[in-house]
Image 1: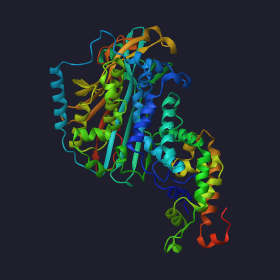
Image 2: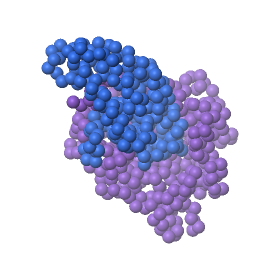
Image 3: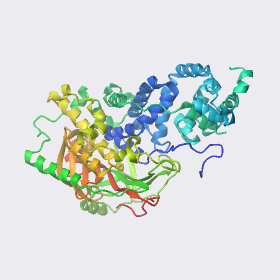
Image 4: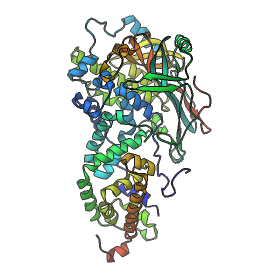
Length: 207
Length: 392
């Protein structure tokens, strides 16, 4: 990927928005119902992001609140700063921020779940095993233990597939801060993943 | 070890939102009472347009109510039949398009501005841009989004003559709601790097509402089934209780819903929908309350087609946000969707003036206030490239 900062991993999925989004948004100032196109294009994705972080019950409310705030604040959207998709993920992250305690509580509960070794899993790469297990054990514990800011950056990159520049725009933080937060979060995640080896789990503490 | 991918996979794929969740969220977004709108810093547009979303509030009624004594936006039975026939015939003529490896769409959009030159008032299209998008038929084949700014230009021959009389300015300063904006008569190069554009080599495979090519091939062709699938949310606010009354509030709800449906269908039709489903979608739209056939109209790319329109609405511009005396007043306009008469292809979605007034007092009925036109769409086997030549 040309132009990608060396510290950033290439996107896992397409993070780009649609080029006509900003035109749609602009015309929605005069024609509010045009905002329905933005809603149609991104509601499911924002809902999915919220569902992964907070579970399906809260997701409905978070996604609805995100689009309500976006719709009301659409006059302040700045197309030169961020794609519409990025802007929406920023709003969603702020809304999710009001449910931080629930998120951390949920992650801690998952951290207590046993990581069961998949049959024949000993030969697999650690990350393969973890993906098969879902969000539990040490990985969930490590994400729960991250600072709120570090967790937001990690999950915007990993779940929303935003690059550094987009995360900076979404959260309104300096570009350099994104890198340092992401590095810190990834270091902790890697340490936790290294510890998911079930043999080692028996010896290590489960904190 | 790709720890980011591991985190992503550990979080898993959540269930998609239900249609009901989406309908409720959409209704909540559009129907929130208007009382707080000033707090959120809306400009004059709140006055002109935002009130429309607050259906059911007194403000909204004032904005969308049909003026007493003004003719109802309804055509004679004869014109309904003729127009409907034309639209449906267009749908019938939609020919089977071959499939290919890449689906592309090329969309041009813009906004009208009125220039009050000393030598005479004329209209331009400004804030024009073109977006070119291609998507691989299958996931992993990639997808790309390109954009470029298009030159501002006078709308009609008469506007062009007045623009020349004003000295053929290449930079045109216009009043844009609550500030002045300047548009130039130059285009920019295509860009695929930056906000809202980009190339994703791993993307592809999904189209409208996340549907795959296979999903789209399996679409029903029955208009009711298609309406349930793509216009399902619009039943919120369109319940029989509301429909029973013939008051102005009901008219406002109907107008808003009809305009939303036109926009929704114009977005859906940009996807590779098979001809029979395409025809069904056109029929479904034509059958919606508040949607009327209006015969033939031209689109901003100078193509003539057959059109459906939503109910008219009043828009009042006041001086509250700095609009000059000349821009103040009330005009009426409606949302219009235009189809190619021969193929049934979507040509354009556009807001058209019906009764001049306010900023558009010197314009004629049929004047295009804002548009989104399909320049091209289709399948190719080669990876599509954005066109070099300008659309106008």
